[in-house]
Image (cartoon, rainbow, N blue to C red):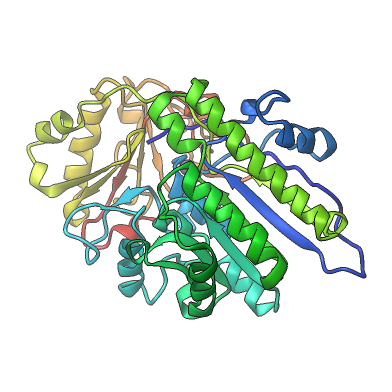
Length: 413
Ligand SMILES: [Zn+2]
C-alpha cells in the first residue's frame, strides 16, 4: 500500500467548444504518479502538456490515499463517506467472512448483490452521461477491481468498460459486442501485468475505441508507474524507465487525436489517483488489539498506511478500549471514529489531556469536527474535503478508522 502524496494536476490540451465538432474529454489517470515526476528528460509529452496547458496546484487525493478509494471518487465525484469504498481492503458481512480485497472485481460484484445492485452507493459519471446521451468509455490497465470502479454499472448496459482482468482474463470488456471485437483484434493481456497491460490497453484505445466507438468522454487509467514504484522505489532506474514508457503512450494518444483531427476539440485532463511516498513504519496493530482483551470482537482490514477496525455490535466499551490502546502504540498518528455510534467520538478530547495534537479522535464522515482543543480540523482532518490541499500531517501519518459496527460495516459511513 502506498502512503501517498496527494496530487491533482490538470492539463487542458485545448478548449473544446467548437460547435462543428463534438467535444471529447479524456481523463487520463496515471496510477501513483507524483507531480514532481514530470520532466522534459523523463516525461517529455507530459512536460509539454504542462507547459502548454493549465496546471492546478492544490488538487489532492481523498483519504485514505489508495487506488480503489480514489478510483471511486473519480468516477462519482464524491468522497468515500458517500460512495462507500473506504479502503483497498474492507470488511462487509455478506461479501466474505473476512476483509476482502477490492482489487478483485468479483468481490465488488458480491458487494453489489447485497447493496441493491450497486457497488458504489451513488450515481456514477457513466450513469450521468448515459442519461445525457453522451457516449462514455472507461478503459483501464489496472486491476479488475480498480478498472471496474471506473464504471461499475457497465455489466448492466451502462457505457463501455474495458479491462483485461475480467473472468480471470477471459473477458476484456462490457458489453459483449465490444468484448468480442477486442478479443478478435487484440487478444487479451491480463490486467495486473504492469507495462504489458498498459501497452495493450492504450493500443485498444487508439486503434479501436477512438476511431470506432466515438466516445465523447473517456477515463483512461494507466496502471504504471505505481506497480514498479512499489517494487523498486520512486526514482529507481526501473521506475524512471516505466515513466518513460507511460509517457510515450500519452504522446501516442495525443498524436492519434491529431491524426483524427480531434486535437482542437479535445480536452485531456491528466491526474492521478494518488502520489507516492515511502512505505510506512510497521505498527504493532495486533498487539494493540490483543491488549484490549476483546480481540474476538474486532476485525482489522489492513491497508498498510491505514487500517479499518470494526468493533462488534457498536460496543462503545470495545471502541474506547481499542482507541486507548492505539494511542499508546508507536506509529499510530491519526485515529478516526464514527460520528454516529457512539454519538460522540469515542474519546472526548477534554478527558484526554495527554493526547498529542496528532493523536486525536474525530468523526470519520464529518471533516469539520469540533474537537479543536486537541485536534485542529482545519489542519489535521480535512483530507476528505474535496478542493482543499492536504494538510502536511497527512503526508506522513498512519490513519486508523474505528467503525462502530460489525454487522453492516458500511453503516459507519
Ligand atoms: Zn493507485
